[in-house]
Image (cartoon, rainbow, N blue to C red; front, side, top):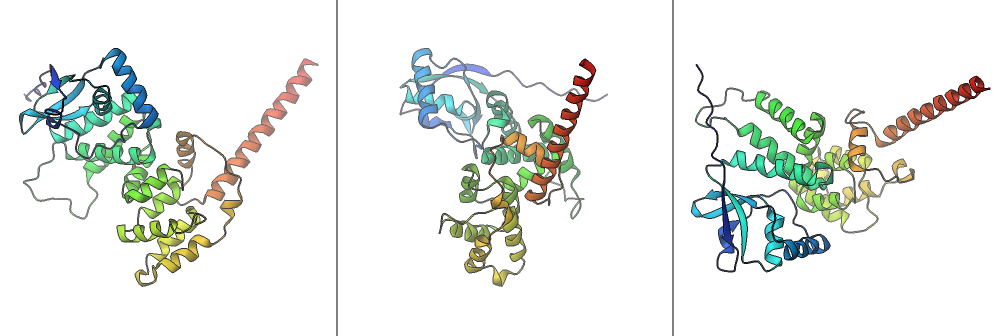
Length: 316
């Protein structure tokens, strides 16, 4: 008969001091994937805390000893409490929480409280990567040699499926964001600021950090250098010849005119854009995506128009 899994003890409620002498005892979660609130967003939270206090306790886990804690939910509430001048904050203290459990908790609470579609691209990439790795590590033994060296790890398939379910996205989207997580920070910032989209970013993420640094410095040389799927693909091909992967070659590729720039820009919500891209093979050119969507929309409008005419004939 299998042994029933022991349930975790519920967390303990406590008021922790957050004055200058004690705030160092509450640590941010290591490699926290979410950006801190700033400016107006933080100011609103601070005003709310001043008026109502911290209504929902933050969650922490014990680390090293009982006097030091790591936040697993509530980073923004703690910053707002400090900004509001509070001396203490309500917390739920969880004991014996593994790194994997903590990583899953951090990301699941943010999905629930903020909604995945509101994450920035970098937050999506870092969050998905952290959750995916936590799932892979759960129950994994490190004292045994790998029996799957050079093979597809079955844990990776399970982790991708589980991650897709939690984030309510497709497995191909999980895979794409695992690739995007390989972008260096300056390029990730440009992705967040919509300097280029996820399609060219996915191409560039396949390059090593030094090659990415070279592309980033080139993009910062002139404002009119644009990165798109077409020239990102060319840069990826150029990287196969390491001796010719120079700044001058990169400039030549980025300067090339292409048809993508001639398509009028259309603002599309990120989650809709991602779902549309999933309908096409990974290597599909964006012009081809645009053409196929246009054909589908034209066909839809034509069918609706014909149905409308038929209804008029029937009514007459």
